[in-house]
Image 1 (cartoon, helix red, strand yellow):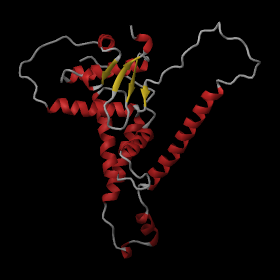
Image 2 (cartoon, helix red, strand yellow):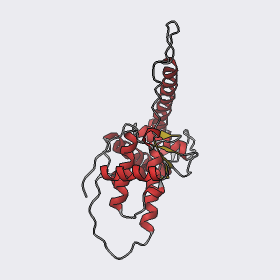
Image 3 (tube, one colour):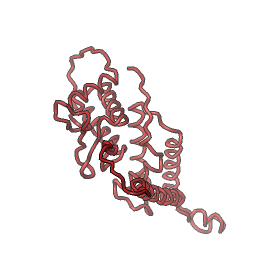
Image 4 (tube, one colour):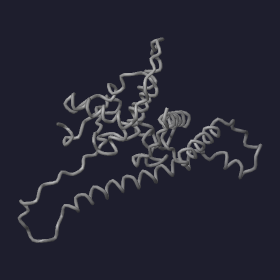
Length: 252
């Protein structure tokens, strides 16, 4: 299969992924279950590798950090008289403290950036000039967020679950050789299918074949269509079905 490498701006870094997992599973940030969060984090990394996405080195560094913290939490605690006072203080320190501090600091900056972005958007609509007749200008619609009420990690998680379900099903023994599908061709097929469905299709129904190659190409095609703002994804609530919508200007 041809190698496809895609880098998306929506992946903001390992701390963003950790914060997403904490929010998704409603985990107390001050009492992180390291074993569970490490397992979920590594699953996302594995899924990114399955999709042949470029994984920045900081994701792998964070994976190593989580494994190291997990190892420290599993170490047995010794009696107090076996170490001097300084070593006892080090043993009493929670190995998660530094990670929690970084996450809290990152969350503060993330919330602040969201607040500033919102106010910058509102401020951009304010003009310090006398009123003018602008009827002759064509109203331009603001760009639609391709990912509504969800993050790119939700989409990767949905693909991960779908991929696991497809693998567990017994595939037919008959092998049919077919030509590999280029991403641009699969993108056109998805757009055509959305137009046929009046602009809406469920994420799961975009993957009719259990073939790994076809699933990966389809998922990468979805990401590229989002990146070029030809489609957008919506999810009403956590764990609900994700729906794919064709942008209005693309609906014939």
